[in-house]
Length: 170
Image (cartoon, rainbow, N blue to C red; front, side, top):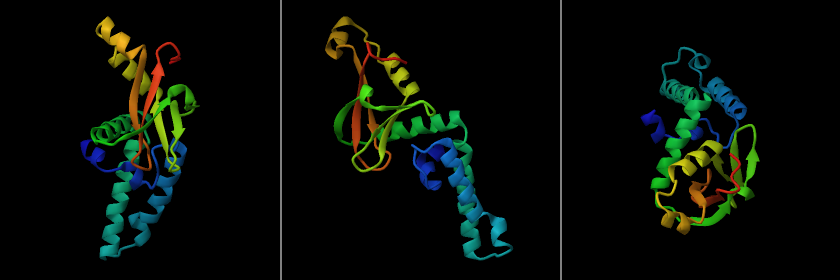
């Protein structure tokens, strides 16, 4: 999955990370029909070779994104790469102000570009567990709040999503 992390699998499927599993499946089927080698017949042209490579790329992306666990793992790797980039934080968003998507188990928030920010319930829980204060002084500094930087799925904006430990309902 390391090679897949270098390529944006959502872009391969002409989709976005906020698309549901059903939407990804639909986009995969459309592209698979468009680029399937059987559709081009026995042509040995560079166009047929290009279509075959595109089909294999689409199929590889779908193999990772169709499974909930491998998709989550890919999204986490992708998010880690995004966070390594030095993007400015545009604003702070409180988790309570985000919209809860029960089907995807994600909190979402719209970006001004039309894209969106999303944080999974698992990410919130992992960050809460990972950043337990080691001493009382640190706890006082953070005043019982946790947060993560989240990048927009469309543009280069990022926001700091924060939540209070008292209001967390995970």
